[in-house]
Image 1 (cartoon, rainbow, N blue to C red):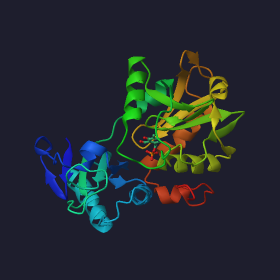
Image 2 (cartoon, rainbow, N blue to C red):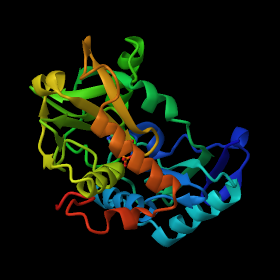
Image 3 (cartoon, helix red, strand yellow):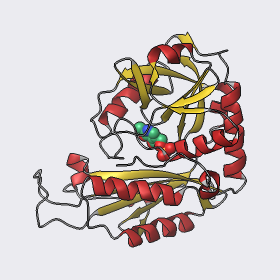
Image 4 (cartoon, protein in one colour):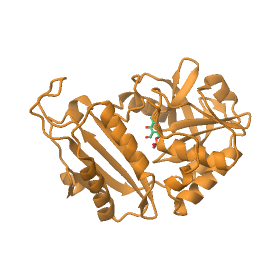
Length: 297
Ligand SMILES: Cc1ncc(COP(=O)(O)O)c(C=O)c1O
């Protein structure tokens, strides 16, 4: 049950084909997004779209008809008729002979989307996940949601090989974020997560979590978490649109906290689930928060 759209046309998944001259194919020259829907409504659509537009601007893909893209996404989502869906979409710079400087005779940006049922994440919440550390070998613009994900693929492969669900990227003594998720810790009772900068993706789920934690009167600090602090943390968790909030119960060989999903993490998850499944919009959740979605620059 997967719906596929290419350049605004809905296509049987087995017939989905793109050009070998697509710059996304040989350069990873494009931007993507992943959005969840709950009970028939796209959740945080405007926030995901804002991040998408920012990423396009940062890599100077300037000729996208954004209203058309917005329309295609809604059209595909409506046609899929999957109330709790995961929507992936990407846009590449277009097709042309391979030269680093985009040539003048390129096709228009190329859009690809698929919609499929959202994963059932309940077992992660009940059991928690194991994680590994992996040196952050990515570039210095991790705030751009680029199609180039080779380091993330390598880190995730290594995590899977070692029986873990997520790899946490480290730079020196610090953990930046997960290979496909944001990273959070409960340290001395406070919620700590890295500040928005060039070393992490400005996660949409992050802003919702910080707003929920504020509402729950949990003190929040935006700063990097050291590896040492992580090993000794009361609680740790990851967050993303697809997997939502996943408590971490193991980091490398070390059991985290009690070895079970932490109490504060579970409280945040409970509210996150109530809100998302209860029809509370993203805008409503972040209405009064002091935390930003995107970095200031
Ligand atoms: C590297 C990375 N960080 C963080 C996230 C979480 O972002 P979001 O909450 O917007 O899904 C993702 C999601 O795919 C990611 O790939």
